[in-house]
Image (tube, rainbow, N blue to C red; front, top):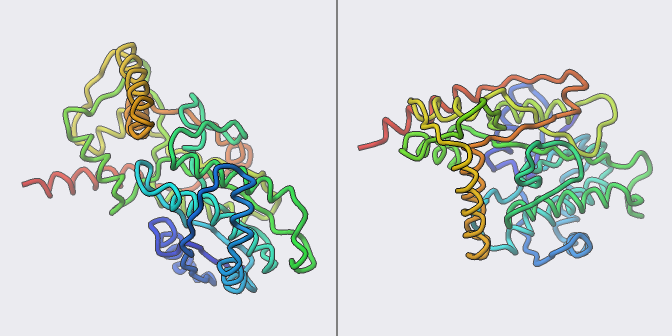
Length: 326
């Protein structure tokens, strides 16, 4: 089996390439083209992807004789970046990659999406019930909808004869790893007076390690049978208080849940008045306090388990932060 990893220079892409190399797999590393788009709906995303003829031709050539393409490219900037860059990288590029994979006769395309497309739903799942809440999550949701539309359409005329490229979307959750800015930021919060959880019953959280994500993605990529359109990454079994204790080295403050809910409602109202720029920050506080349940149905039904090391990642991030302090 021959793999191509699109976005091989990124945090997750590099981790995938490293794992494939350790397993002596045949892997082609592909740098993602930089695309910009002002598309605001699926039709516009599909149109922009089909008009990116240079990128499409280049990727199709790079994907030649490849069995599985893994799209790990994208702009992971939940609070920033120009929207045209965000839409180009996170919505249009996945469709360009899928069209190129079809043209090259690739068997399977695995696209890394984000559980953020479901927003603040109490339980993450593999349904089409999307609730994006930021420029980042909207761009990821656009990609999912466009890929689902593309998967339902007939193969393009220039695609080789044979089975069409199967497209599967992996919804990654809160991925942590050494050197990742979001992990360092989590450790800083965990060490600060802000580190707190809502009181009451322990709550699960979708915080996972990059090792766990890589293992799950490669399980999906090499799965011998058919796959659903969307699969959700399972968690590593952490609770909200454990995350903060591991990363912060101390017990988090416990805040009355009604007070937390009132603060979240106020925060979302303030974010709406500020043009949604603060919505991502409010959502992260909400996750810290309340966590989020998940139902990774495909993994559960097929007995899929992968190894992760999120506890070690968080503990090391906390130790590194304490060492770096003056």
